[in-house]
Amino acid sequence: MILSDLDRTARETSRLVRWLMVSPRTYIFGGLLKHIVNPAVHPEFGDIDLIALDIETMDRLRDVFGYAFREVSKPGSSPRYYLAKSPKVSRPIQLILMRSHAEAMQFTIEGPQFQLDRAAFSEGRYYFDPVIGEAAIRHDINTKQARLVTAPRNLTHFAKHRQQIELRHRLKLLQKGFTIID
Image: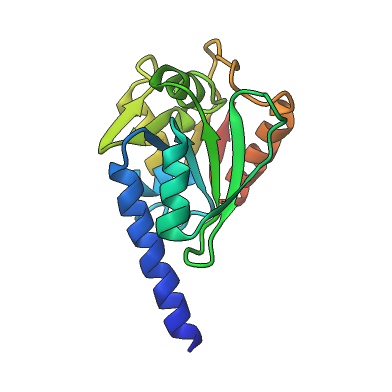
């Protein structure tokens, strides 16, 4: 019985990832993006980091995959942050509700502290920081190297406690076998 439950959640996770990869107005970043770029080097991913440009994406995730969303941002703030869990899918979702493609690019391409995080995937298309370049970002993802960005960063859409989040992210990367290059 347990094996069939694991098989079912694995199948639902795979179906969810395929759906997210083609879902309009949805941007994948973080660990799932690294898995999509190179599943051999990044076979596992914990949670699913998403940006959605409309509430309908959350509705579909609820209706089709059973996700229940809980807002964790302060009322009236922007962007809005949500955490979600599903009894059908083993991966939790961290979702940021943004207003536009430009905001999604500011968050995923212009803001992260490490080069390998300056990428996103939406509707079958990759987005990479054009200053760093696709080849350099793919190289860092493929070789598990986290190079600190030296260019100015756009922190417009980040939480006020971003410094703590970035320290935790650095620690997680080290735990996953990444080399940090300052």
